[in-house]
Length: 142
Image (tube, rainbow, N blue to C red; front, side, top):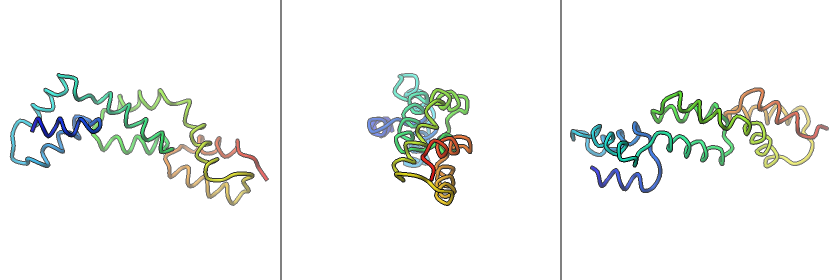
């Protein structure tokens, strides 16, 4: 089990909950999965903080907003306080990120119909109403 966990952790960061699930998925009857996860965390090979930082960074590169990131990371079993802290550290980046995504989708002025379309797309990408509207209002109007 330890070698399997090392292989997984060698590829990317995992949350403790997620790694425990993967181990139990491979060995459903094996005992000691929780002890192994605790030992890996004690050895600093497994860290929810590092996982959260890595996860948020990767989702920022995909132009995803805070709401979508929060929903995705909750399924990984990470503490809400840790998620809030990491997302708050990127609070100044959300509107510029939405604006950057918008510029990549459409060049030039945006009329009312396009504005509605891009608003829906920004919200579905996980940006809040205010972030989406700020990004759209910063674009050239027709």
